[in-house]
Length: 86
Image (cartoon, rainbow, N blue to C red):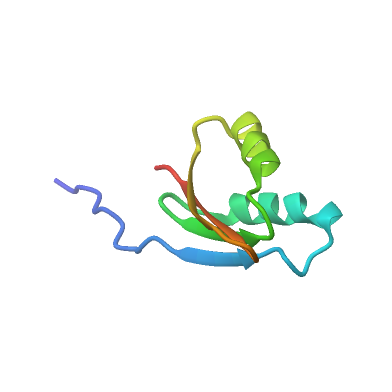
């Protein structure tokens, strides 16, 4: 009897620094990268301030599909970790 083996591919982590992008393009860039994430892959997003509007849009468009964790806010940058659930 054959059984399917679990994938041995490790989860990937990306960093996306939005600070150099125009504000009008930032969300679309993040959304494109979210579509590329596989199960348990994560993306660190860096921007000038906490991206609360981005978080709201992700929850509205992909309810329950991503975990969101604020890793720090400082005077020059905020960093959030977005991870695709299984």
